[in-house]
Image (cartoon, rainbow, N blue to C red):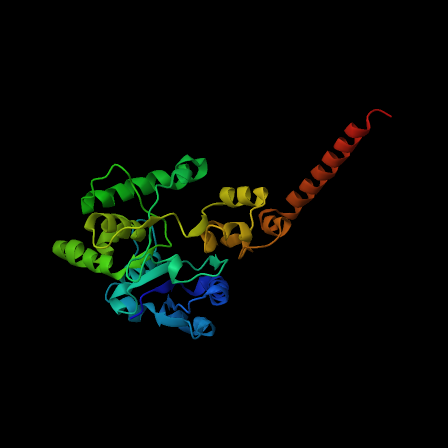
Length: 311
C-alpha cells in the first residue's frame, strides 16, 4: 500500500483525453507517484498504450465488481454512477492510504509531488469550498447550482451534519481510506446500504465524502482551496481566454486545469497553453470568424480615421 496515489476513472470515449492527461502526468510527476487508471474491462485493450512504470491499468470489474450497478439513476446512465462508485470504493483495493481523484479532461501544468496533496505523512489536504463564485455566476446558477445545492443539503441531513455553511467540492479531492472505511462501517452498513443506495439519495460522490469527513472527525481537516482550475462551462472558459490567462498564470495556484468535456466535447480536445487565437478558434464557425475579422477591420479603420481628423 502506498501513502498516496492518483486515481483516474475513464472509459473508451475519453481515451484521447486520458492520453493527454497521462502525458502531462508523466512530464510533471516529480515524486514518482503512481496513477491508477480504471476502465471497463472491454476498454482495456484501447488503454493498453497508457500503461507505464508509473501508470497502472485496472478493470473496473476487478476493482469494484460487487458494487457496480446495471441501471442508471437520476437520469444518469449506469456508467456514470459506476465511475462514482469506483472512486468511493477504490480504497478497498488496499493500494493506497490516500488517493487524489483526477478527471480524464485534466491537464497537469507544473511539477507536482506528495507535498501538494498531503499535509503530513498520514493526513491529506481536504478541498472544502462554498463555491461562491459559482453561486453568483448566472449560467451556472440557473443550470446547475439550485438542484446541486438541494441534493447536497440532503446529504448533510442524512449524515446529520448540522452546519449552516455548506462546504464541499466538485471533484479532484484527496480521498482518505480511513474516512471512507468509516463511511462504510459507521454510515452505510448500519442502514443496510451500499454505495449505490447513497448515490440514489444524491448522486454526488465528492459531497458524500466531504460531508462524512466533516461529520466523522476521523482525520484532522486541513482545508485548502481547489488544487485544479475547472472551467465548468463555455462562459467561464471564454472569459478566461479574453483576459489572456495562460497555463503559466494558472500554475501559480493550481497543479492542473480542466476544460469540462461535458460541454466542450463537440469542440474536440481543447488545447491548453495555446495562444489566445488558437484557444478561441474552436468556439467560432468560419462565418463567425469572418464576421469578427470584418468587424475588426472596420473598427481599426474607424479609430485611425478618428485620430487623423477631417481631411
